[in-house]
Amino acid sequence: MFIRFQLFARGGTIDVGRPLTKFPLAEPIVLVDEFDIWHFDHLHNLFELNLLSPNDTFPRKWKLNSDTEIFYLIKLSADGINVDQEDELTGRNVDRPSTISLERFIGDVCEKENNGMTAKWLDALREDDIFTYDHLANLKYSEWNELKKLSMNGRKILKSYVDREKQMASDTKGISSENKPGSNNGISK
Image (cartoon, rainbow, N blue to C red; front, side):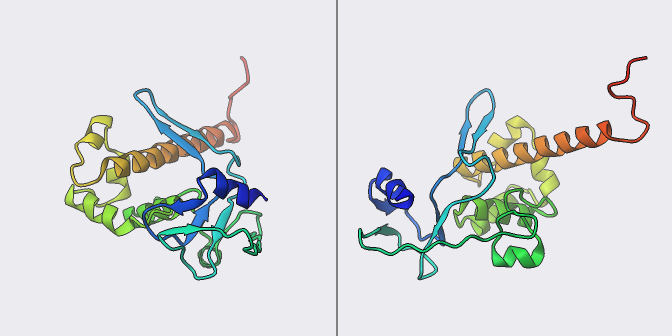
């Protein structure tokens, strides 16, 4: 019922403009305005709900028939995080993109967004002389708008993920410094 309702709420006929390997049924909301980037995930980043086609990819435009049989599969890793079979082998969690290289970061972001733009975004960034994740992460606010080859939507999505990764890194750093042995945090003298 939930799957049928979600598809009906989107108009019944699905047309995202490109073939997809998975169709997210409940996507997080990301808003970018002049103040900051705002994230809201209905599922609180606990799990993903994706519709998969038996043919490996959905056509560009499709509709679910009323008599279609729907089967479900729950994939869990040892620690309870949803992962794909490829990710089980590498231990990757695409919910938090890898910052090891620009290629991995862009690949993980595009996989999470399910947009198939990895090669195009990498080529655009290289044309704008961005070759490492550190180059991308250290762009100033005004420099993001100076990227000429990357589309506006690409800039917004990547900036959102870079900002989120910086926030997570600073949160992790803050927690680890509070928990250091001999730390005086929270102790009054």
